[in-house]
Length: 207
Image (cartoon, rainbow, N blue to C red; front, top):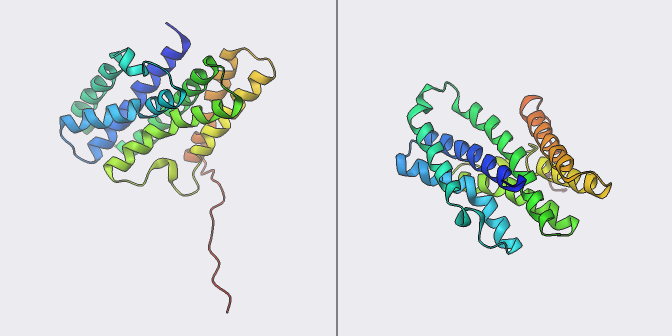
């Protein structure tokens, strides 16, 4: 099994768990759980493959991805009531999913010899778009757009680090590990320490 496939499997599993947790907070039925879990799990990777013109799209070429997402949804459907703070679990699971999905997007672009800018953008797309779709469909403010939080910026920094490490001649595996660690460290720092970006504040108009 290739490294890219392993990353895709891992990100699908963890993102599916976050989608199912969001479905539990919205009190959806079991079909809703499966739908939101699958949307979250494969949304970013699907857009990545479409933009890179990769055929077949990863989950169409291997339906196991959908099976993993549905299984994750079923597990959460029957166990979510046992979790005391589902939102806290959601945030931390989402941070791990981001740290796996960004390297997956980077690896996909690198395997197709894409230029550095596209590699960074594909890492960000894979990491951020599934969660964005999840939150929009449920009707919540997307995590990727929460005021000042490090999310898209964490994905950008991780993907850019991978490009930099590759440029300096590091092995691809080292670059991807560095990408995942940097992405998670920044996102976790935002959650645990409150790290954030400056937020625009409108000034009152002059009289």
